[in-house]
Image (cartoon, rainbow, N blue to C red):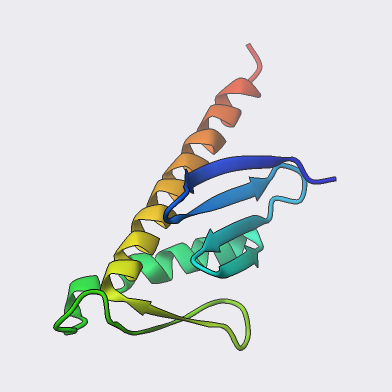
Amino acid sequence: MCQYQTLFYDEKVGYVIRCMHCENFQIGYGNVLINLHTPDFHDFVEWIRDCPIDDYGATDPGIKSIIIPTPCDGLKLYLSQRELRDLHQMLESADSEWRSQEMLQLFANRPA
């Protein structure tokens, strides 16, 4: 049975949670829900991190003009520059929280 750890939550942006048992991640963003295994989550964060947000030349940052592939076959995100920035910040925060929790677990499980 899954026991979730919240890594990021914002009612206007979305959330990222991680199951403590199966170690899968769930990303809720906009009207999309993506479930990823740990390596896929890491790859997705890296992919979004490497997207040159400011290089998308939309005259209005609210116009959807950016297509982002996902690790899920057949699923691409169609985002505006503003939405890509929000997704980037959400994933960065979740990734930082996850890494912090992993570090704390290393110290907690260390013999005295």
